[in-house]
Image (tube, rainbow, N blue to C red; front, side, top):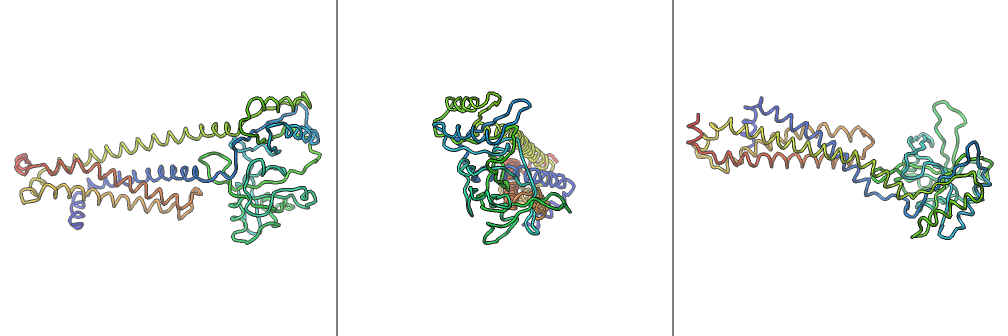
Length: 399
């Protein structure tokens, strides 16, 4: 059966090569689109790694040409923390979750390196405010004031990259990679490991992260400060006004804006969904065009082979047999096109392209393969039924 189908396909190779090319390129495009959507879907269901609900972001800025002494800033934060409805408060760097601000670095431990690490400044209350989950070691504490190296907390994926399967990493030294040949690299001492976090958005993956301790009561004079506040459920505009008035009561030269992290998340989500929606429209348009193209080619193919169909019917072939022949030819052609596409698609996980997990590529291949076979089967079904209805006398008379 298959040998006969291959012979029929080979006898019409000039016509079938165009159809084979269409199937191949359609598979490649569908594989790309499917991989993107599967990757985003996989990221969406991953744990966020922190609790952003009921957390507000405060942007405190000194007046024009002014700076805020750290001691005065600490006093302001103590007064805000004492307000009814405020559960916890932490001082951090400006790259708070869901914002379009990133601070990245490259770090090394021994011979291992990792780049594009999200780096954050954080005080001793950051974990309690943001709901980070420690899996090893501890968070920052006052005893770290005596540390000779700046204490740091790393995420689990950063731990795996730098230390592999080491049973314990607390106390290990991480150095900042400032370029080849650079001496006196900044060193950090690991005191804890957290679960992986996804701070950039709902569809972003787990980002290697590192939190570096803010030394309390230092002599730094800040131009602005980013503060995260965890509030009790049900708090709203009234508490926001109290926070703004409390900070203004210390010095009129400071300005404060209050934003909810949930609002930041939704703003980031709107910007992320727009290109995804456009990609979905392009993918749907591609599927429709592939279906129309296949249907048209098969319809034309049947009309060109009416004499062959009539002769086969005259020799005793049944209608279902004719229909099965056309479906079989189409599925064989689809198998050839998909096989070529799979050979190309398999290079992506082998080369670790675009830093995408191999499992995502595999699911993308399966989705593209299933969709192509479904399309070709549906498009071949109606033309094959028309071929089965052709009567031998009519087909031969036309010839």
